[in-house]
Length: 260
Image (cartoon, rainbow, N blue to C red; front, side, top):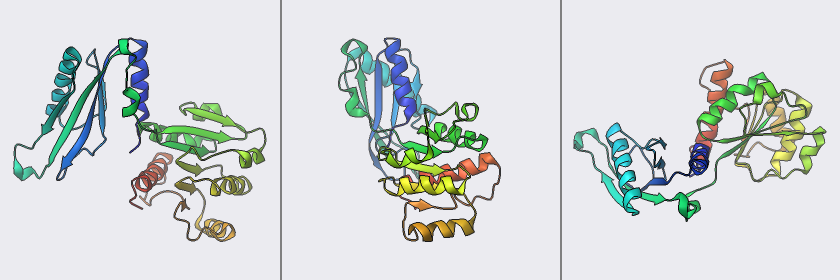
């Protein structure tokens, strides 16, 4: 499971304000549950939080136990059990652990995982919605282009402007989890794809018409490469840039969760 980047932003904000923090983690589940093992909710000493783990009742329970954990400097465990068996909801177990600013949040890093990282090739207006959708999902977004159009990609976490297109072939792309090629230039697309094929990335998506994508698959020997998705995105029937962004992120999320 990957870490939502909003959690890191929350921790950074708390550190700047010298606030203590609790992390509530799902440690066990039985039956059908909204949450999964590893899901997190963070609460600070001002009762501010990030993350949602269930119903308003459960949310308030976590806020209450977080306050107690900070006051008593102790770890708390609790179970969430459905009162009405007919709802079909299962049981989930949680750990509430405090971390203190004065102790430099000792052992906090042990609870944190890698943030899912998306690499986007292209910086035109059509990329804006994809960045916003990825940000909503808590992914780290990096945009690469030969000429960055800052007005369209200002919400990205990182921008990499290439001095020349071929520079991408010497870059190490193994730290990224997924990539999308949205440059809308066949020559440029081919060079980006050549760089990506040699990486260990789990998802490589390319935008284009079906005929050209068949050519690409044959030319690069990608007919049986399960990492390669072209044309990119799930078929949800939409054709606006927002719907296309949704279809792309949905496909990446499905691949991330081993559903495709």
